[in-house]
Image 1 (cartoon, rainbow, N blue to C red):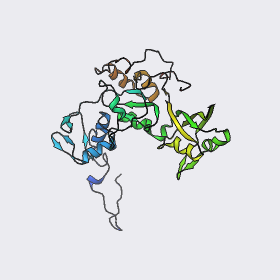
Image 2: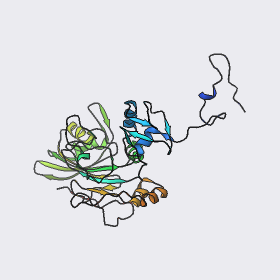
Image 3: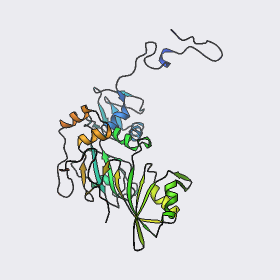
Length: 307
């Protein structure tokens, strides 16, 4: 039954083009938003892709577009800075052992080296899942798929991220209690953290800290609030993905079965990945593919202590 739309009191019957697609005979546009397609193809995140579109760097079927409110299909031709965008590869995920001294960004306004400058040339274009700051090291996840990036960065995902942290001082359980309860630092509220005091080593102490939010410099800021200075911070896990024995600066691709099991990717994605022709070649000391058969639900063995 058609809705009885009032014609007075500031209301009018909606025009057909104003109504949601699928109602009263209106049709839904085919395909996906162009920013989503660019993100899925590994060009950039959705937000960055929208900025690229507004800057006039994207052409669609030979014409420059300046609005991201465009749907595209497989038959459309997209170019970025004059270079054609190829069909997206199957979703892939890599573990990278980030060293200190690298920034986690595509470009740095200060000219500092980025993690992407140090990746093997054989690697496809990838995006980082979350960040590690300049002086932090350890596990950084990389992906060629914008959907995976968004899924793993969402707070609702709730995956625990674990860090080995060395601090200057002699903390006690009482000292660390505010971190476990949740606290405010610099006017920002931090959720409760999992904190273990592992050992005292001279003037320094080693802690293991787990958190689910990952706000900017959260651990350093929270510890500074209780009088402790971080002098080393190593991320050792991100959800089920472990740093394990991966050497500093090395990259290791996560097995497709683990991707499917841990991220809920459909079997079609795994089959498509099996037929993908692009592979990262092994370079001694830089890229390795795990030969270990992992236990179910585990990407690699965890390393308990960081030297």
